[in-house]
Image 1 (tube, rainbow, N blue to C red):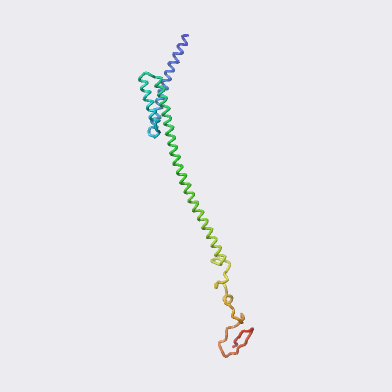
Image 2: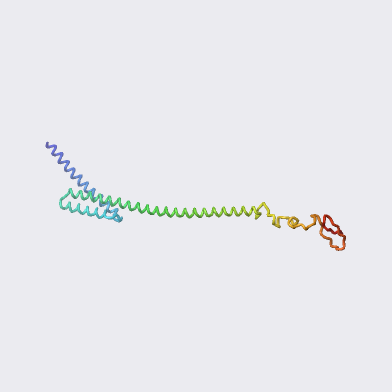
Length: 190
């Protein structure tokens, strides 16, 4: 029986020692977390953690170790919540920046796509104009315009005089020379 009492006393002392280590750990962990998140705007979480640490100190001074440990555990919970809130705020800020960059990139792509489509349409119109000009005998065209004086010979473009043949020589310079008619056209002979 005596050994059971000794074992229980050892466990109780060990539990107190563990509680003190746990208390020191909770307090130290809470204070460490609070130092890292105090600069962040995380609402009341930092304030609540600081208040819980002050209550734990007052309870310890008053001799209420059990409630002091609970207050330090609460302070640690608030400090962890503040840390998580700070991380959330940071991630949200990065997300908003990336969303803004993505929207700007999308707008740039849409503008560039519109410019590309405009250039393609303009190129198509120019090809049609070039094909039309080529078909009409424009620069580099194979088909010649029938009314063009450059591509046709003078004999083909001048209208025929009524009654004259193709092989008729020019009229004679001598007005007194005898004139003979051939194929209904008057011809002068020298």
